[in-house]
Image (cartoon, rainbow, N blue to C red; front, top):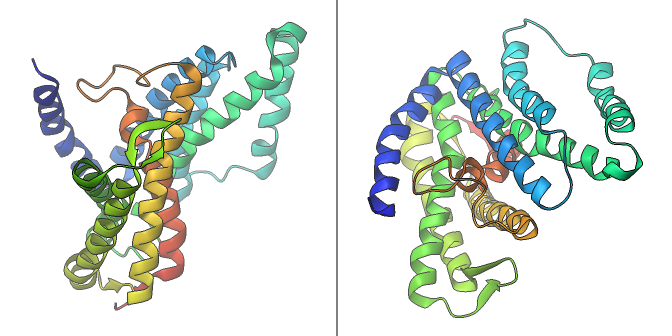
Length: 284
């Protein structure tokens, strides 16, 4: 079976699942994000170990998976985690490192990698749940459209960068990190992302959700989403370079690992949440 066939089959199976979770929200979305965070944390742990950091992988996976579920619980009013509980995470991990790793077990790198892994995976993905229930998202349609916004723009950026880079790319963007990316591809991704931002606001967000962006807001949002997507991709490539691996794992046929598929989204989704909170206008 060719790699393209594997990609297509996986997309056919995965897209309906993701679309249903986004539409229904609540527990289905939280569970999907929790699963993705757990798998991403596992991949992050493997890369960190390959780079010599040796994080507390089991604990990291559990905490990463818990973050989206905790956000779901907070929205339902089931609990509000006290700040003291969050603050105790660092002393608790340092105490574990003291007794489990000792002087020769690289405790500093272990604790740092564990905390980074939790936030890089579970923390970033939890913003997808928060965006689905953004303060401007009144109803399932508005919430779905807001969450799909950064997803669509990330895909648009990837498509623009790929096709323009393939046709016009000469000068490498950052060859030491990702030899295949070019400056022309980056510009192509930027322009297509801005164009799709305008179209999405004009034909989806305004008429269906009563939400909009001004023209300067569209330009800013589209540009920032494109840059964030490209930086997120480069950051994961940087981590893989240090670990000496080609893919974060082989979990997804034809695609590599969970982090390989979500690297840009781990940047665009939380940034979209922050920007939309500032730029959205009710009534468009």
